[in-house]
Length: 439
Image 1 (cartoon, rainbow, N blue to C red):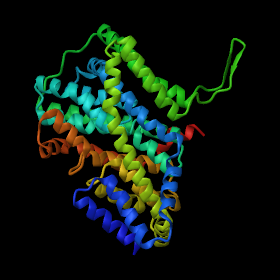
Image 2 (cartoon, helix red, strand yellow):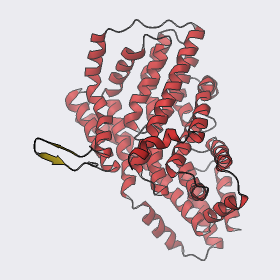
Image 3 (tube, rainbow, N blue to C red):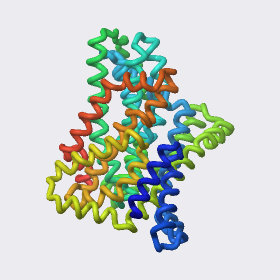
Image 4 (cartoon, rainbow, N blue to C red):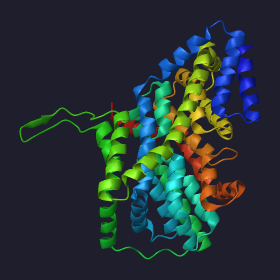
């Protein structure tokens, strides 16, 4: 009865327009007061204990790094480099938008930030070059989803936090699927451009490419800082000096280092950030960070209450007793997450459903790293599907097109999302190859 009331109260509150964070917390409090003998003070203590984790500090600092990048002229230089590299192919400007999203994703960890930053530059450029607004906003809105797959990734951090899975290994697991996803998107951009007969741009000279690479070099130093810092150097000995090998800092420390690096590049290298601009950026980013942590607090409370009622163990035991093969279990998980993703943002999906689905996946023998990538690709699909697809709203803001028109523009590109979901689900090698090399 307690669990039934919990879910009924949650969905009723959502239907009447209550913010999702409030709906999560209020439904738990209502169920606990009516049916649970547990003192309410215990709920607060348990939530604090679950939130008192060092890895969660990575979330606000990656958001700050993305904001400093956007204000510090880093995005424009990444777009310029992408244009010089692939702009001369048929559909080259569309491929440029996708490649720029991949560059930005390797630093920001946020899908919405990727769409806003790259789309703000690439959408008007694509339209000015003769591409239809539908082609332009479809490419940018869907390619922005790469921002949560290529490390660093906010959803992967939260997945690792909830499931106690290694975040460095999860970051490593997102690299190959992210590159494959970007490649498939660029192939589609090329095919659509050939079909619609868009003219390619003139090929850049190697000297121009070199200048663009030099200009974007400090920006590209951010992902290099992440890779070297989190995964470290192998052991070596040179000139009588020995290095034992290993990581230099944790993912959370990497997020702080990225924020400082992006700030330094914006102020001292590109000279586009002033002291006032820094303060303005922090003030503008803080409400978004606060909103995410408010959702996290209430979602952790929701997950804790489910665990107290024995729901994860019951679901895992039920699935094992059904004796279904793992491929069917993963298919059911995908169907559940796709449907849920229509109505909920990615962060609540992870925080609410992983306490239930992850123990079941473990019981079915699914690799935790592989399962994390499957979850994130499902979230990517939810970002471009109505009614709450965040990328659709950001794309609508950029293009001044209605939400339904942005969604219609995304439909050809969503096919790549579906193909990618099937690939990561049933070809686990894509997700587990690089983490396997870490030992």
